[in-house]
Length: 392
Image (cartoon, rainbow, N blue to C red; front, side):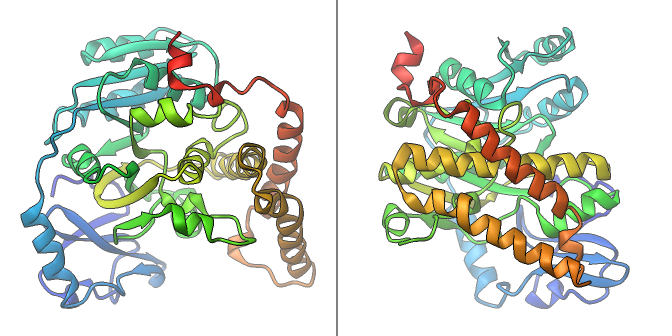
């Protein structure tokens, strides 16, 4: 199956739905496979099932997966792969090593060095024979935009340096652009290892995976949300995403106030949100698979959760700023404070939940996100420029 076998990860081939029973699984994550496609998983800790995604696997599901595999075709679109990185040359080398095995070879692989402090990132990129570009402004969305400007293919695919790629990752990601209306595609992101308490907690209560069924996100569904914010974060993860290069010209580039190095995260989900607001479709394609190395320490995870909530809150305000849809502002300024107040109240009366282990960091990140946006709301919005303007 050409899958990483990190600590705490177990791969099981499936011939019959009964092979996916959660019972008796070892501690960690058991991933069930039908051929080269992951179809479900079970998370177990201290002999107890903590999460399971197998309810969809039945006698009708398996033949459908087999038929989709038989009908799969190598796409006729060219693809560039962009990897944004900073001071993680070892992780970058590991990620780059998984690219030569791709069933669809990218036209080009572009490493965007986002202000690394020494020359080792450049050395790793050049040793791998890929295109190396330096972006001196710290911030993941600065780097993503530099990658988009550099790419020459019809499809621009992004992954992260702390990821390993299944051999069919790019093929299946690009193949999902089978209709002109599909502007963005994301893939399934599974853990590469569950070796530490922090990694287990993240995968159980946060995680990147969005299930094992293909989903299309339609503009009509976006429009008809009423007073609720469309949950663009459900579309996928920035560790495995691709776009038609043409949409950068129409919709603009990533908002450089967001994501790692700036607000903290949500540059990807804000862009999917923007695409839907402009009438484009997004697709989640779980047959495109990547494996992510989660933070190994509790301290690292706490910082990540702080950054997630900081970025999420700032992104809500950016979405309101760009679209005028008031549900975004209402979520940031009314719904989220009420949600945190309820959770804090439960904790005060002794009803503690493991899901709330990092509640203090969540609240701190939320407040920091509002402050960040307030400081940057009048800054020049480079991402709102067209792709063509960015080239001039």
